[in-house]
Length: 331
Image (cartoon, rainbow, N blue to C red):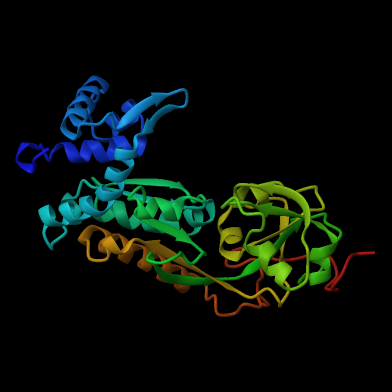
């Protein structure tokens, strides 16, 4: 195939088709009918001399040539968009789509602050927010995601920028035997945990921190969402060790919040992107909004006090125990 014979308008459709691997979803994303997308796929197959997508029992799968094209498109398309857009980016007239990967923690704590800014400045932009998964960094590499919010540093060559520090608090049912204002490592070893499994790892951030301190968290409940862990606590002996800002944002439930052991140090939350987007005006703008949202968090709640001695629940939430201030179980 010669460049002179290629229709470059097909590249956007090709990018979406290879990402979605589904005619109807791909058609909806670029505002085509399914029949029009089917005709586009036929043209793409002719243009590239390859089937690109082959039907299997599990749906469409990429051919080896299509996988190579997808990797190349992940590098080429952002540069083409920048070339067409130029160095200036006008949010008020933008109709782009940006794709984020994040947890429900980031959606609750940072997301609404980011989205408010995005749609206030760029009302016609589209934001696709997907869950943080074990393949999220790979999705950045291959152009299936633009930005990842996570407390995990990525492998090279991905970029990572710290956003804010977060500390842990302990969340328990109001009728839990422990009534102390601050839990100890022995408390965390004694009772089963409500753990959040996000990246498919055997140990999540909290469990890894505890293991490094010589404490094995007793398995109790494992859920995929931080908010689900909180909702599961009332009436149980479970303990959830969670980020403080999340607890301050969720609706009031029949739980109480205690400070985490002093040995559990704060952690850093950050954002990750691919270096090909370093100078892209759209993504520079998006990252600046995320930074503004993170600054807003710091203005609301100073995270520089990891002890949580004043209010372990964070802003707007009482950490009262309803019992004595001792450091163990109520006997």
